[in-house]
Image (tube, rainbow over all chains, first blue to last red; front, side):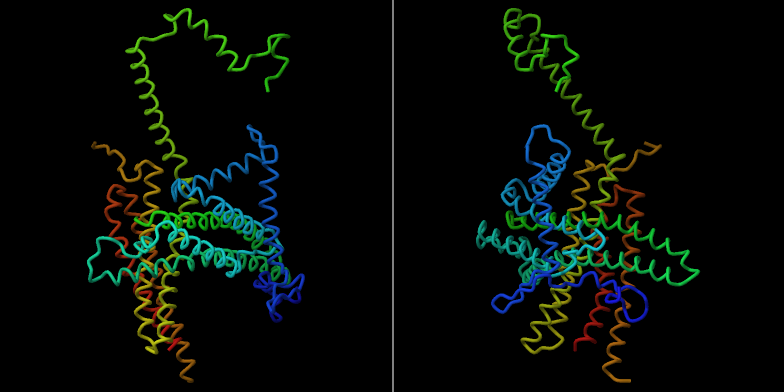
Length: 257
Length: 155
Length: 74
């Protein structure tokens, strides 16, 4: 822990877990495209989620076994969410939405394993996902509705003299989507993992104080309880991320309301 | 699969299809026994429908009473996460737009102030929409049961 | 004191106002929930007032934040 220690306080550095280091250095056209631990865990998440689903559905029997049942529950869960939030038309985009959910959920869950790297605690990853959703919504919106899509920014039934103001507000509201979309996931994962690490640090600090070491199990219990909370948060954040993707798609498909 | 041992040799249970095809000629021969008159049939169907309605109502009540809170808890937390970032996101975007316009036009603090306030308005709008949606979801889930008072002793 | 550092301290002091607004918003929603559970049938009708109160309360906190930003960036 020498590298991860803040100067002399004995407190393990809670930020240390988010450091990205290169595993296979690589340069391409002047850009640093090294294979990092972040990329490794992304790859693990993709292989794990895709592999689990493929393995679970290998027989495709009518009466599902345990693993297949799990996969089907996940599928049904997202399919129902898409139908509820964005209508039957949106089922065309189900592969995208399910992929986003599977990736975010697996990354969040992988991050809870002690010592693992949390991909979603880096804003660049969540921002890329949010930008993907944002651009998809824009393309779908304009492809489906043409110029009609811009009616999203001009609500009907508003007096003409405050229309510019309302339009500006609507545009800001629309532009704020990718920001809040990405920051929420990133901030929740980051804050949760820092809290966990700080509680873990309390255990180490208390163990080094002689007689107060008897108190060390208290933060340990706290850390265990927080881990349970983090599991819930990991699922909820993936759920919220997917849910909002559905709602934004709904706006692109039906801009009238 | 059906366990073999329960049936004596040679009397393996027939599938549903086989059984249906076997009973068909029998029904053709004796129409009076199984058939209901149209009136009776209608009455029967009405009774079945009523029973189904009753069951649905009872189930809905049961759900709101016991399991509703449990299922809504996670959703409520999800909405809480959403709303807090919804407001901040809109304000940040408004402030950034204003700041960029200020840098571009050289009107140092003013456009920033204007767009900050506009961003705040957009944030309130976001929250309003999320709240409406949450309310709609709760109503859909509990059958509007949340909005009605419990019967009083006076009623 | 250096004016630049005074500015930073002032920005920090101004940001306390956002915390005060947080108390207000917590109070607001807490009281609303309390009232709504006592008389659920009236809760939906007061939604507009709830949002109005929230907007006004939060606006005051936002003004504090605005002053902090102004001190920091201008």
